[in-house]
Length: 375
Image (cartoon, rainbow, N blue to C red; front, side, top):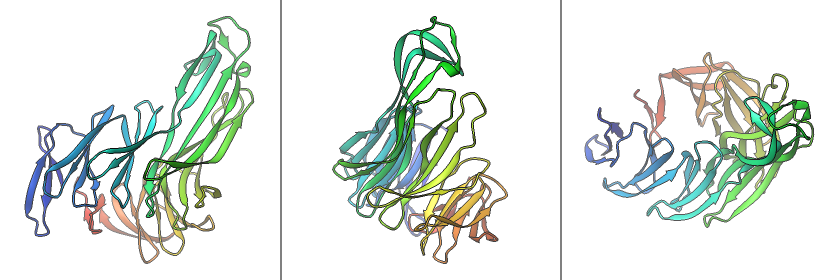
């Protein structure tokens, strides 16, 4: 368990099955943003400390002694261990323009590899952005654009998977007086965006597959769609990948159209099998997803839980919570699933079959037992 005192000190405590504390480890820094991330598969624990524009990872063994710690720039976005204790960490810079995937030896903390996710760039020719409009410029400039990166998972074969969207765009206009306002109709947009999947091997080598590509070559005022993995990525149980994707149409002179949400299924070679469109929703995204038995998958959007056929990519049924912001917690052996709503844990078996089983938040213990999360 992880506990904090009033002065900001953080203690990790090891407790045996009889409830007796065997040791307590004091974190060597004080911060309010501390997380007990997970067990490390050899009896210890991985703990994270968020410092704003950087974070630290600490690994504490089952003897209460710190084995190693490392500091990373940016934000921790995702993590996963493989069965050989290789820890994968996805980080992203505070401005969202730089993302990396780092492989660490989970026992020693030694870095095995570091992969830089390709950055997106925007080329500006004789034009500059000014709030929501454009002005003429006397020269050209280039700047990094935001990188959209998914979560990460490691399959039982030890291979890690992460998806990202990146592209190169050029905005240009004709001759004009520097500083003068530029009509959107006079701004040309060209370039392309790629939705890409990485399969990362334990030695840091990878297989890269472009899932989908969007090209633009029209005026800037026209509609230009963008693709982005939103968060969730998970195995499909068939040797491939399930990925949450958002497609956003951008109409530059009118109200943007509603974004579309999809589940993409990719086969073992990274090729697209289907795009499952999801219903429109209100509220926070919360794109959680779990894989159940009998070819059943579950995902959430807003206040909606959607059950679907993983193999065919067809919706089976949906259940709606009275409050938005739900997450699917775990699939059950009887074909249902546990859904965490903002105020309760619910056992859902169909569109009209749901039983509230616990008030408040819940968490899963390392031994698979369900516990109440104390607020």
